[in-house]
Length: 127
Image 1 (cartoon, rainbow, N blue to C red):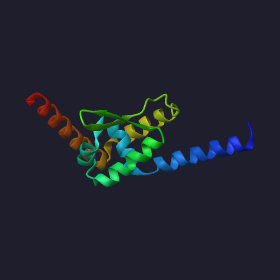
Image 2: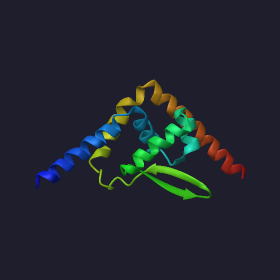
Image 3: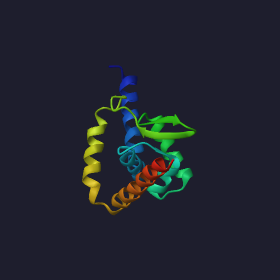
Image 4: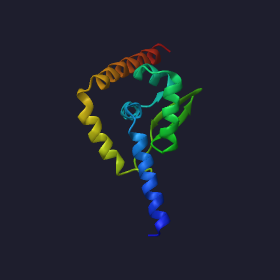
């Protein structure tokens, strides 16, 4: 392997770890592991400003960890295909998510997530 290739791999890995070093981005990935959501729903689940959620989603999308889908005038975000160049990363994230289930912020996100899903289901049944 050439030195420039090794440097690129190391730099890319450092960038990925720096990206995943942010708790908000980990929260987003954890939530998106449950279902696909639009920015409005994610804002409610994470109790964060729309601009922050959008910025973090953009970074995760650029890294290939999150994908977007357009449907009926909405943009939904979901986890990218696990084979999308980061296959070895997902088991580590899954383990981290399992370890942090007792965290209060994670539990609060989970409760708000359930409420968003309940409202989504209720609105779907109504319309």
